[in-house]
Length: 78
Image 1 (tube, rainbow, N blue to C red):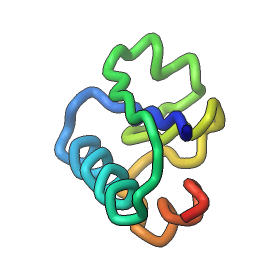
Image 2: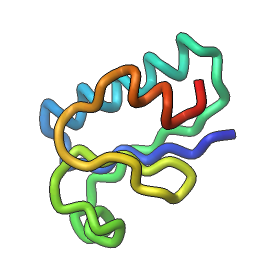
Image 3: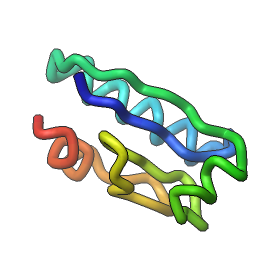
Image 4: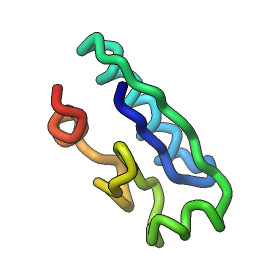
């Protein structure tokens, strides 16, 4: 199972990113656990200074702005 963390404090871009990630997972029928991380100290531990950020299986793959659907599919191996 893929572990995905969405890093962000709840802004519109963070919410849109989470929805996009969840849509890709559902469309591809993947097994994934999606967790929303809103605590600033926890976000900073990943070295992310611009949200939203995406962490997949412990690796930061994106920070700042809404990623494209194609990039998300690449990152999760869809």
